[in-house]
Amino acid sequence: MGSILGALVITLLLMISHYLSPLIGRLPGASERKVTSFAGGVAVAYVFLHMLPGLVEGNQAIGQALRDVARLTPLLDLAIFILALAGFTLYYGLELLAQRAAGREPRAALRVYYLHLGMYGLYNFLITYTMPLRVQTGVFYAAIFSAAMALHFILSDRGLNRHFRAHFDLGGRLTLVGALLAGWVVTALTEPINVLLVSLMIAFLAGSILYNVFKEELPSGRSSSYPWFCLGLGLTAGLLALEAVLVSGWG
Figure (spheres, rainbow, N blue to C red):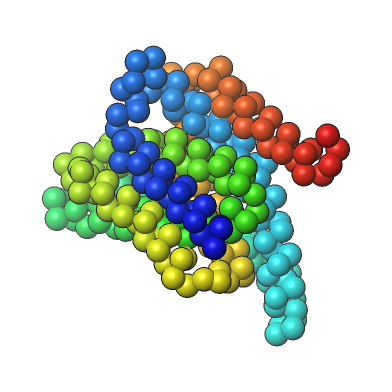
């Protein structure tokens, strides 16, 4: 119950940050270039230092679960990484569709927009559906992940606005905010969480986050700030390293 309530608090904060994301880039001193680069540093550090190592642990859990029902093969041993690759590839395909939709007739472009909105709704759903397991892993890790996602929402909204300026408005943003709440509601009503299922979901989410980090949060040199990227990366890496030391009892 504690993890469910903790996940609810984080979900509400994510919903607020998503709704207010268009305003954050307009704050005094918060230029889009600096916010983008800082968010990229935070997300890259989190993906490489926590999420990808977590995939290895999840793959071990899947192997133990399947050992009694199937003979492990090299392909099954790679299952969780294949799913992460599928998440990466799927969202890359969505980006290509969005780029090509610009030259299509309005009805076709609208279909591509709704496909984008649905897949990013799934993306948000998975973030909060898996949140209780992150809280169980550690409130600190859940907080770092939530901060990275809150910053990421600023950039995902920017991407949707860039490709679908005529369609993505308050209604689209509210749909994505609602998907965050739906993820928490489903996980709260279907407790206890199936760890195997969540491991697979997290793998897919990791692949999609990795692509979106590369696409939106590592922009071209002209629109990025390397010092701010390093600041976000160094701050997050330092916090994760400190947590690892404290958990191991070395401190």
